[in-house]
Amino acid sequence: MEPSIFDFLRGVLLPAADGDRDVDDAERARWLAFAMKVQQYTGPVQAKGLEDTAFYRYNPLLSLAEVGGDPQRFGRSPEEFHGANSRRRARWPHSMLATTTHDTKRSEDARLRLDALSEMPAAWARELSSWARINAANRTRTNGDVAPDRQDELTFYQSLLAVWPPEAEHADAALVARLSDGMVKAAKEAKLHTSWINDDQAYDEALRRFVARTLGGKRTAKFLAAFLPFQRRVARLGMLGSLAQVVLKVASPGVPDFYQGSELWDLSLVDPDNRRPVDFALRERLLAEIEPLLSPERDARPTLAEWLERWPDGRVKLYVTAASLCLRKRAAAVFLDGDYLPLRAVGEHAGHVVAFARLLGAKGIVTVVPRLVNRLTSDENPWPLGERCWMGSSIELPQELLQRELVNVFTGERLRPSAEGALPLGTVFGVFPVAMLEALS
Image 1: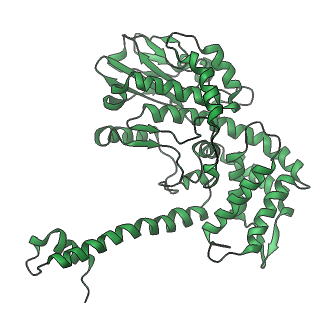
Image 2: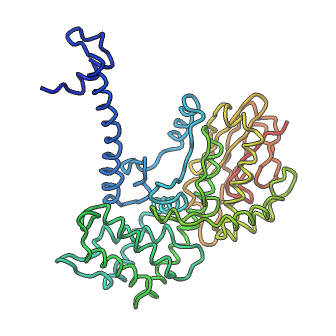
Image 3: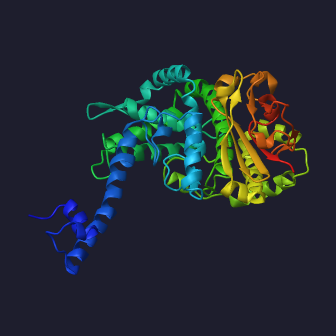
């Protein structure tokens, strides 16, 4: 009878604990080789079964079905977020913080758009039903079934919301091809109607035909008239979430990582879509344009207000990335080794903000970002800015910062807390929807 893995663990890793078994060097080497094979196989098997099969079948909200994620875990509270950051600060302060890689199924900005759907479930359900009715004739019957099935059609609409180019009025040939390839790959990975090994070309072609007809067929005009207003709302909310994510990634315990191309809006599906060439020349030109605003002594408010209105060009994300990294370089010790202190929010909209301080000696940096902003915005008031939005809500600063003047590294504004240590959110978010506040000496 072959020894079990438990025999191996006792005999090889803890030989002194088992007096009945003497493991010679040759057997030890065989078991070590076996253990290496187990390690080499279990990771890919788990990934293929979960991330590359189950995650393509379970699609109520595609942003949850991400590498390393758990679709059963629907979001986290600010308290849980602070708890995770505190544990990382205590145990792994220099671990990498990556929000998108070559292996993610949807890029960081695409996922944040889909996250916005969780804030408007009723509206999303209405739109989904409307789009399905408009495009019903675009589905075709193959092998006795209708293609795409409802799960794949749901994947299509979410993918379309995720990658639709800002300000686009219609889909060009490149976008149609990207979505067609993405839909076929998703169906093959799900392995319900087709797969890489047992492909069903009729189903694959039905998927491509559905995408082409929806985005360039007889009913396209009617569909886009229903789709675009909702898509623009989702895109704006996703943009605000993306800016918040950049700031949190830079300021939280750990070392932030930026995947190539994510300096501007990165709206990509799974590979090979997320490995398209990056226009580095464009990024260099835009970085040269924003460089004057990175100086500590400037008033960036008028320019930022303009860039916020012109957010589709990506300049605002590049600026937030560059300005926050400049602060991190200037105060590296605070971010690498500083204490992490969650900050309490009070007021009517306290649940719509996440705030924390990083403290090291006399140095202090306060990070404040909004969350779940759909309830705070509308088509008439698209940005969560000013006292009218925040209605007296504030954050409470720690004792170490009560008498300190704070400078907003994005806008250049200088702020002082009240005598009670409160910092009004209507002031923090007076002209720009994210904030990093550096305490002045």
